[in-house]
Length: 325
Image (cartoon, one colour):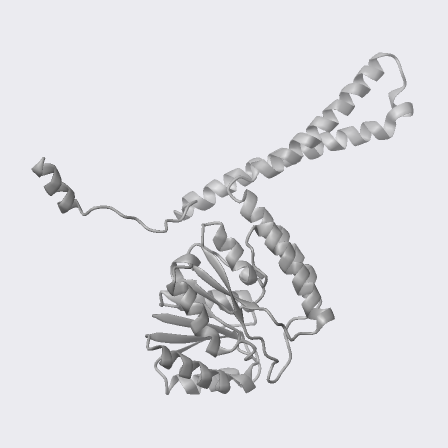
């Protein structure tokens, strides 16, 4: 069973051509499928078109969000609604060609958990899109340890079980492979075509570069210290309290020797006190983080691991072997 998830926002001109091409490709695969469009509060006639299509195609399902929540939320809604064992996401502006879907599926059939599209030959503007994208992808690759050239594309195929371990929020949809790598997902990159938009304009620009950089820092922290926040805050706390303690100890000895502490080393005394207090705050933050992580996993019954498979003999077979000994 395939589930195709497509977030849209004001993509009226592209919907019918995308639906026709997508249906042709999926019918040719010979697999059961469903198509889930998620309308992120479009202001054009996108939803009306989709609502009409639903009446004629039982494979189609349309979700409409109450307001414009963003692409991450739209994808999350589609993933939650999907019932297929393989989930494929792509944009609704026809910059992703449905004809490339079999390329992604082949890799999933080979045993990979995520097949991520790679816009190897991008047609975007070099200054506003290509260069910032290459820098961000390089930083993301180094921060996450996942060797991908293109984190930003939505065009990916997933085993549904992989997405169950991931909670999306903010704008983290582009970093799903990095988040999935935390649970040991096997990821491969597949070159895909990148074509110009047929109509409309991109919802992204140069301004999102800084948001992506902030997300990279978030991902780095989550992948490294998510289950052990004290290892991060504890280091900072140790450096702060250690430095502040040494400074204040030196100043105490200096004071006991009869020197005028405030006149000679007033700024140093303030710096030592601030470092000591900052270090204690970092320790406290680390402890609170440990408590929150424990509450997060225990209250929701979540696990800190993910099983790929379990193999065992059937009980009746094992019992018959024991009886024969």
